[in-house]
Length: 362
Image 1 (cartoon, rainbow, N blue to C red):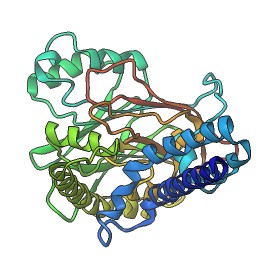
Image 2: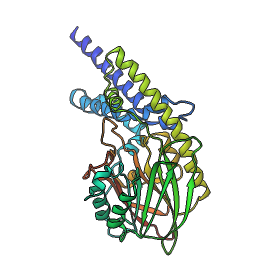
Image 3: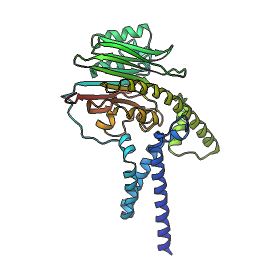
Image 4: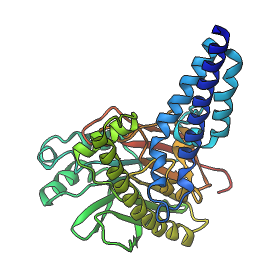
């Protein structure tokens, strides 16, 4: 009797493990779905970390209690190799001494507030210390007094600066040590507070296309963010939380659909400059397994995937356990090191930094 009960228990746990693997695969490849046609299903990529951890738990569990069943979660990880590597890569760290370009991308959250901008602003101090060659900022809107503060601290480091806005809302900025020779506006079909723009930068021996984008925000309230956190944890124990969970998924799906149109506008520009040396930075407001990331990755290389380690969680408020800030580069660049820097928390985002080396014969 006990032997039969043990067999049933093991089989039941194995079935649960297989279900976790199926959900991990569905969420890992959900970014292949068009959010316009499948808005809710496209949100599944946000839940990938939960299913990844679940399969990791089963791997440890089987290793302790039934070694031969370790094959189940192991095969799950093999099947999900691509999304696992994209979400949490493991790379050998290269020396950055031979880097030809250092890039910084940072959603500054309005530089952490205007009041702080007028004094000794930690975000501006951080940007100055990093001394990157090219800096792409999102949510970098400020007033005239704030611009004076930016110029007084960074003006001598970055002789070339430009800003793009979508109406009175939004605000992205490029700071460059190299001359900006042309500005290329990227138009979004639907009215939105988000914005994207590109610039051609003259590095002397070549011209570099620099794209900076802040894609569709989800715009959740603090209460909704807390609800999302509970949903990721699987806490939908009451009718009210299930109802709110469905509403939240609808909002996330709507934002995904809007973001899809925006990233198509961005990739249309990339197609126009196919073969051009390029970097793309920005706050995607979506998972690295989401549709927007996958569309850009068809044309450029994700620097964190190639030269980073771990998930690189860049938004540190309320349960969004994903990297939503990115740096991409064209094939002529070799990412040496890329990391999300959690040493500064003045914004709701952490900055992402990357060192790049020009490949030979390019």
